[in-house]
Amino acid sequence: MVNILISGIFGHMGRNVFELAAADEDVRCVAGVDLKAGSLCDVPVYGSFSNVKENPDVIIDFSSAQNLDNILNFARKNGCAVILAATGYTAEQLEQINAAAKEIPVFKTANLSVGVNLLQKLVRQAAAFLGEDFDVEIIERHHNLKKDAPSGTAYMLASSVNEAFDGKKQYVYGREGMVGAREKAEIGIHAVRGGTIVGEHEVMFAGEDEIITLSHSARSKKVFAAGAIRAAKFMCGKPAGLYDMQNVLSD
Image (tube, rainbow, N blue to C red; front, side, top):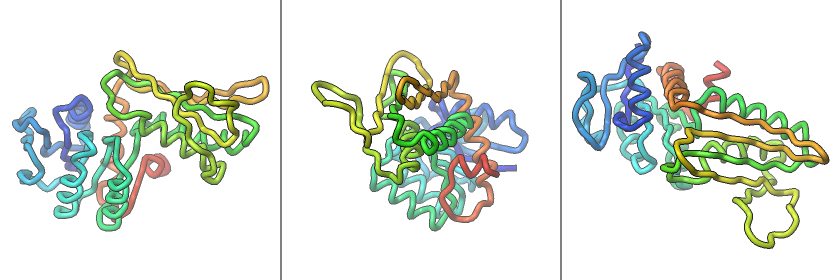
């Protein structure tokens, strides 16, 4: 049995994770942390990590990048694994995460969807095969409440493309005005916000007289919650280190 603590348990993603955990005989939610303290189906929810009495095996965080310090400090103190599913981390926070991974098992991903992580592999292979003959443009679409842009998943996909070019490609965010002809060293990244779009990502390879498009569309946030549960099972008992969804899929 994997005991989990859900950070941001009263948010949309937190509730989805809680519901799936309740239906999974291998996982049990023992506590939650949220700005709104209280309880959820007899599970205690604390206003801060400093008040948590339970000792979970894994923390699943869907709260905010601003909560990183509290999560990592609690995990170090209690020796538990961490699944970081929030977005919008700064460069300094990414360094914090890498440092913490030397002491505790840390799982970080921009997207917990199995389909998106398969897309990441396909995009990497396509970029390596097609090479410089094809221009790459990435379009991501999300709901009108999403705060960060471009999405973490868009960056993840761009990074996968760039691996095929030894990191030499430069990211260009949208275009406006007389920007001139497109440079070969560009990867265009474009963000669309509107309505209740859960998450859509499209990677376009445009060549001479032909276009190849690889895409993924999430129709419900449950796909991310399911990935979080899967990751929690994988992370339980793992040694210190930095992990992601590719490790889970390989396992």
